[in-house]
Length: 65
Image 1 (cartoon, rainbow, N blue to C red):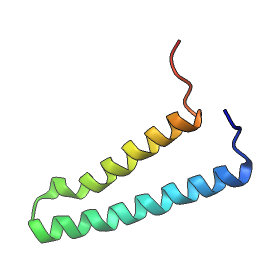
Image 2: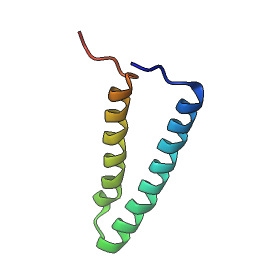
Image 3: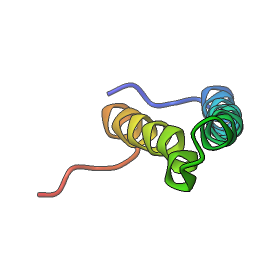
Image 4: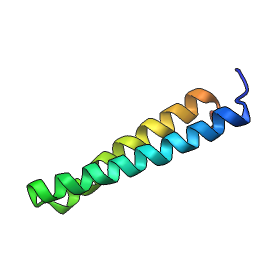
């Protein structure tokens, strides 16, 4: 597997932070539109799942032996 450079890791972290912030904004809009408080966390769940999958594929989380 290709080793990530520092620049790629910095961009990955910045992208994750931006995605988290946008998911928070989207969640607050969903909560206000529907009145259901649990919908606030739905976009963040999607961001976390995609981030974990990306980290597995990049080799940052090693598979269990």
